Image (tube, rainbow, N blue to C red; front, side, top):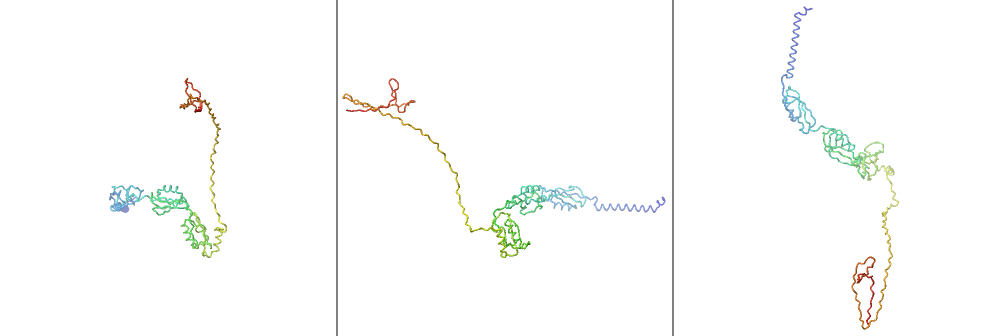
Length: 366
């Protein structure tokens, strides 16, 4: 056994196998060095704060590949400006190594418009603010849905819920201000059902019952009757019922009269018109204050004493006629208990005499 193992033929084959293996290994490493440019490294150029177009051109010239990714929008930097790169500038990489670039996007990341149509405006505004959008103008439009969001406008164009627009964009909202009052009903008799729907929608009404004479649903049928009648006034959002047929309204005269008896009120003009008289406004009576009775005291007239006539004495020759002179009387303040017209004469002894009424004197001349 051992002799056969150390046979020269066996040893020769073993050496040949080892040589082939070593050769294959050497060729493999040489191929890898050639393929991977072993020992050949390229310095990474600095492209930070450059635009993405300039950075791509520099990397292409250096023989490096690149991958571009966007970060969150930062308004402090220009759009498409390179914010970061990997590997760092100045490091050495092999030819063809991919360089990762982080670029500032053109604007904020897009967000989906929330579904707030037909929702109350107060809650809708909160939802819009939560997703990062701003409400610009609030446009009020007549609608039966008062204080509800009717449409959303972005740059003047309506957008549907779910549409992507840049974050922090300003949108306008159309809010219902309530129904309009006393709108005239349009006349749609003689129009097709399709045309009547468009006219009713423009007049801010809604289509109610549409009855086809043949029981079909052909939109080309002609309207021969409507309720309410044309010219009536209704509030916005009221429904209009339509009757349609393939025949003309002249051919359906009996049917129209039958509908008039049901939906039109007949006014009896034989009765005299009702006259309305104005009722005078009843005024509340004004009560005058009752005067208080005045009690008049009975004043007794003052007693006036008749002046006493003085007895005339005969005048002799020796006697001379005496003329009485009225001396001025001093009027003093009367004490309590004395009459106002009384006069006080001074006496010699200082005592005051009782007041007396002046007596009339007569002068007799013979």
